[in-house]
Length: 222
Image 1 (spheres, rainbow, N blue to C red):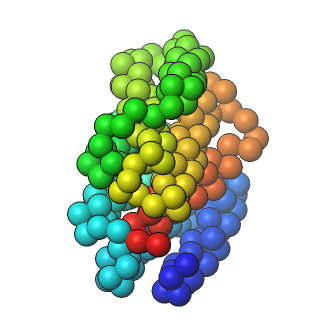
Image 2 (image 1 turned 90 degrees about the vertical axis):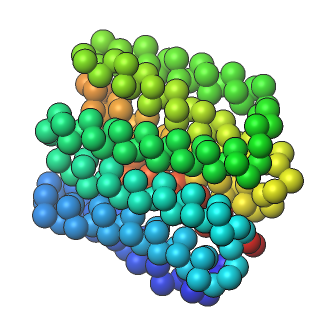
């Protein structure tokens, strides 16, 4: 791993801990500071790749950086998710994030077909999650359906990077694991938001930032 990455990654791990503690204590001020700070630290990883000259592709790095900037906006919007308009805005910004990620994976690896088993598994999982959430969605039925379809497509394209000649094996693993963690964090948040709260829902924060970090690390050439 590039030596310049140690500081932002260590800071990210520490800040995740402080964010989880703030969430448990319901400290709104600390949450509103730590959430965007964490995404900024992930952005710093991509910027490090761009400045170090050890990036896979300048264009790919720009795609990932742009996605993270929309994520930052989504993080800020969801700090105020009790407000329906803020929640819808956050949903839209993260939807754009997933579209940009999927576009980056397709742009640099093509539309190679991922494994049939993986595609079917994702389709079944998406259908099950939507059916579970459906009774609680109210006016958000269509937006949530679109969101689930897009994140499932994003993960499918992330997995497909393993059969791409453009990405190294290490990059493909960083992308696919990162996308899977992001996917799982979104599912946990959806279940917690729409009537199925559980005590370990803060785990979604670890999955989310771990996923974003994995994708950010894929911008490095090695």
